[in-house]
Length: 323
Ligand SMILES: O=CC(=O)O
Image (cartoon, rainbow, N blue to C red; front, side, top):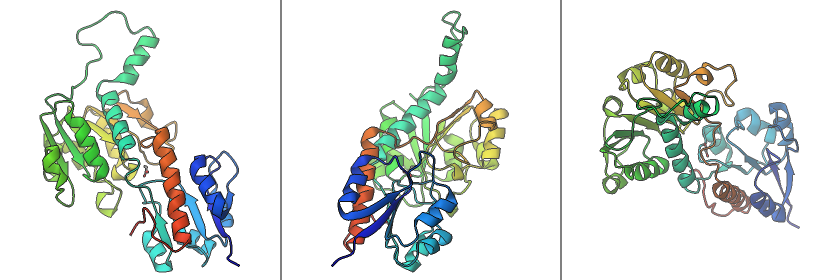
C-alpha cells in the first residue's frame, strides 16, 4: 500500500485552487491562524513532512530542514524569488525546490509601471491635497513631476520581469531604454534596449528601475555611491527585493534631494515599521510587496506551486523546478 504524502502549508489563506489540488492526493496540514506562522511553530509543524508549501516570508534554512527531517522531498514556494531558501543546503539533502516563474511576470510588470507613474506624477500627494483642501485652483506648476515621454529609462536586472517592464515602458514614447545585466540578453534588440555598465545606467537614466533578483552580487547594489551617481532629477523604483538597496543611504538621498523620488514595493524589513522615515517622506511611495497581486496571477501561482509539489512527490518532472 502506498503511503499518503504529508504536506505542510504555512498559511491559512493560500488560494483554494492549489490547496484543493494537493488535498486530492496528500494529507494536507496548514497553519490555521490568520497571522503568519511564528518560527517556533513552523519548526514544530514540519517534523516528518514530505512537502512544504511556503511563501517568500518563510525562511527555509538548515535549522528548518533539520526540523523537517529526512522525509522532506520538496519545498514549493509561491514566489519567483527564492532568496529565502538555502538552495545549497536543499541540494545537499536532495530536497527539490519548486517556484513560480513566468506566471507573475505580467502582474509584476504592470505594478512596476503603476508604481513608477504613481511616484513620478505624485499621485498619493495629489490625492491627499484634493481630499484635504489643498486643491485651491488649477495651478500651472503645482503637483508637477517628470514625464516618461522622451526620457531615458534604466532597468537593472533584465530577466523576464525586467524585459516585460521595458516592453511596457516603450509604449510611453521613451527616448532610450538602457539595461544592466550580468549577461547580454538577445531579446533586448527587438525590445530596443541597450546594454550598458551599471555606472553609465545610473548617470544617464531619468528613471532607474530595479528588477534584479537578490543574489550576493546585487546585495545593496543601490548604495550611497550609486544614488550619488544618479541625476538629481532621477526617480528610483524597486519591485524586486529590499535587500538590493542600502535603505539608510536611500533615505538620506531622498531627504537631501540627491535624487527626486523613490517608489518601493519592497523594503527591509517587511512589513516596514510604521515609524520608518520612508513613510514620512513626501517623495517616497511605499507599497506592501504587492507586485504579483493580481487575482489571476495568485491563482495560477498557487496551482503551479501545488503541481510542483505533487510532481516532486511522485518522482516526476516538476513544471517549474529551480535547478
Ligand atoms: O516578490 C515576489 C515573488 O518573488 O514572487
